[in-house]
Image 1: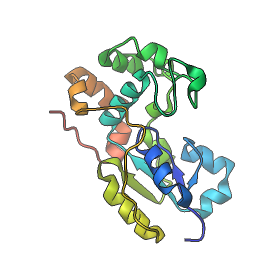
Image 2 (image 1 turned 180 degrees about the vertical axis):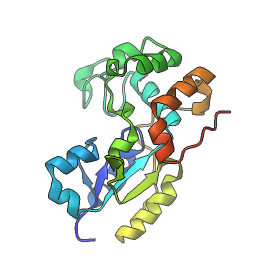
Image 3 (image 1 turned 120 degrees about the vertical axis):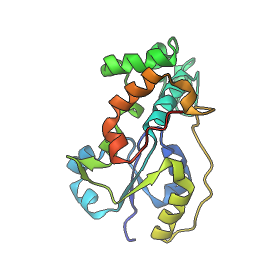
Length: 202
């Protein structure tokens, strides 16, 4: 592959891990969505191989919540913002004071109230006007195997993944009530359908 592939970094879907482990082999442009990238760099978009990682929307939504509540992590320092790479998390002041059920309802009723990019619908990183716009989609739930296949495709040495920027421990199902589960299902209905995720509430 002559040109390095473009990695569209869908937030809270192992993007930091991929950037660290495959950084020398890929082109990285942050959290820009595919439609916007195509507009600003149509030639590069046309000529380069493009890939993205998607994650179970219920799992990812929990991750956005626990991430926003952290006092500090590799990107944000919510106690001493000047020490954080990107200062304070944009939603920390709100999310640090509410529980998960309140977080779900807040986003359901007023999505503009919360700002973090990890709350975007994931198809914005994969599709343009409902047409697939990337060459390969890796799955967070099968990431090591998918990355192995991706490395073989690029004809580069396989890498053993280690997690970075982890914000959640435990099973994401445990965060949900029936009501909050169905609310997230409603919010991300298009992602659930496009990427084939099942309603597996325990």
